[in-house]
Structures are given as C-alpha cells and as structure tokens.
Length: 179
Image (cartoon, one colour):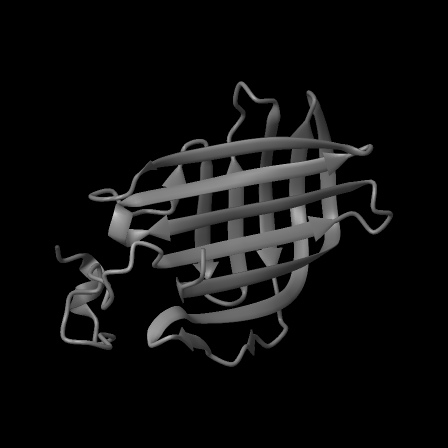
C-alpha cells in the first residue's frame, strides 16, 4: 500500500513506508504526552500508538484531579485510514518537534481537551535499545524525549479548566519492546 509520503525521498529500506521491516506483532509507533498544573492539583497523560503488524491504532487520555483519575481509551482498525485520529482523540503535528495539537472532543465519558504542546528545547535522542536473548531479538526500539509547555483547556466532570503555561514532556518511540 502506497501513501502520499512515499513520494518523498525519505525511504530507509526497499519497501513502501507503510510496510514494516519486521513481522513481529509487537512492532509499535507511539506518542506519549504529560502535563501538570504547577500546583499539582490537575494533570493529564495522553497517548496514541499504531501497531502496524496487527492493523490497530489506539489512544488514551487520563486526567488526574483532586486525587481522582478519569480515563478514556479508544481504538480502531488502522488501515486504510492512517491518520492520527481515533475518535474522539486526535494528535496533529503542526510543526515537527515544536508544536503538536492534542484534542479530545466532548464525549459521553466526561473528559475532553484542546491542548497545544510547544517546545523550543532540543530533543533528547536515547541510545538505540537492542536486546538479544538466546539469539532472539526481544527489544529493538528508538525513543526521543522532549520538555515543553502546554496551553489550552481540559474538561473533567463537566468543569472546564484553563491550561496556561503548564510544564509538559513527551516521548515518541517505535520498534519492538518485550511483552
């Protein structure tokens, strides 16, 4: 299956971008974000992962407020619609490595958000993770981390909270991990 990005000169192996180079069902590509109010009374964790070899994309939003955790989990078949949307959750790369929009539309679960994660900080690319046990690859993955800030709003239990210049962190990782 070819996608518009296959028109670019960015291929790393002799296959279309949609095809992984390994058949391991654990192959993943994930975004993970976290942010918290400076006082610590409201925080969130949001993520999305594509698992190409099992044709699934999933995501979540977890909001912690007043010692209570509120969760939303979503998933769907990934192909042929490969965008980073698993209704009501979406992640939009506005400017790579600098500005990412995180949205969860209002829904029956009572948590929603419209957040802009931004950073002027350099990425921290971790050393490549490769573990081989008894001749079998158990982990082969790459990850980068980045600090930033978050602005927008979060709704929980019917109450909308402003998010203004919260600290934020993120992680983007891909490959195969144990488990």
